[in-house]
Length: 594
Image (cartoon, rainbow, N blue to C red; front, side, top):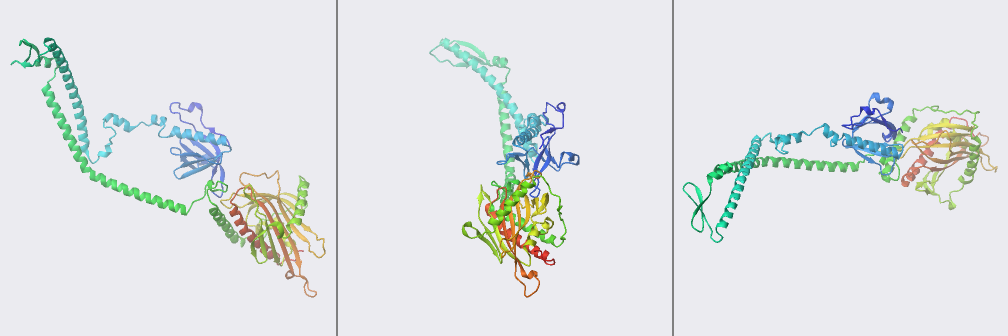
């Protein structure tokens, strides 16, 4: 995974708007359940996140993009290298090479989202608020003009109310000044009377010319002030202002009455709209509940959260159903292609006389140990204290299992016994070991390659198995050897054995694409011959192959124990029947190979 790369220079940046340049880097993106995680070139520009198959293919256009304005970036709870970006129903599952790089991507995406969103400071500088400017200019608060498309009279009355309000405010200010001045004069008058007399209450009288007189205790008349002098000093026509004030308030009350009448007339229309909206919401809620119920009935799997592992969102029953459905599909494809496949297709020949000298002796020493181990323990009877459990019995075929778990991983050894008429042990082991015939009977292998030839009877093979979703894809690297073991007792038949066991090799280290499984498998065969009558030659009707097949498999990763055991119980008998039928068909027209 590469770090970020920028396509611009510092001089191109506008410090006023703080717009970020284009950034790019390689991340693993979840494609689908078949191809899984794939490396993609991710480009971050403005508020858009795009991806390309590679950096060299940018000129051909992106393969997908999402807008970050309303995106939700979620670091994964368990995977330290993964984070998800979701916009509504669209979800991108992304993985970085290490947690630090993941955090860098998250921080950068969040920064682009903040700088490019509608609520950011830069966006407000670039896009002014038309509503705010209109509201400030008109003084109609937040009332929208579109709400009055069918009611211009109400809008006009509201404008009248604004005018009345301005007039009323000016009148209130004028009258308040008049009242304040009167209060000041009255205070001075009270002070003057208090000095003239402390005991007798005086009352002003009016002369015919409009002057006010004050009666003192000596019944003498003293002129205090006149209305004309007050009017002249303030310049206010009190009577006129009072009449205007009364008219203004009457106009306001009339306009309010008119507005109320208009609103009452509209109430029925708004009520009908509200009823319709309530009905639409009810229908939408019902549709949502129905869709949610349907989604629960038919769950959609495909994201990495449903992959195998202890934190998988899929339960064991659904996991088993998915694996079983995938295996059935593989079987159908194999049956359709079997009729069209020639026996010589995809053969891989082994050079008979050229052997590698690198670490050959180490592998051959291990071969001898494994052969002796299988001859000692694999042929032992299933009874006694071995705790073998019979799980399948179909005619001459019996399959046994012992339940073994280590650190939560199922490691159940399997053992099967079978008897096949018309073939020899040499023939069974030959077709099981020779890679030239591997694709004729093996349906679970996607590809295989001979890594190294140790001898004419021993090779190292790298084998990739077909993926069965939701399980991860597996591969194995193993030594495969065929050996004839001579009997030490003249009454017992010779034994043919094929042993496959896992090894390590510098040329094929484990990859991130597949989980490396470990195997220890043996096909052990003995040929039993019933003597023909008289001097007749031995035919295939006189031979019977006794087969013992043992398998110890470590899947290399966690999967539900019940699923692994159920699949093993189903697949091993199918494999033995398919393989032995192939050997019988392949050997039927050939000379007997003892």
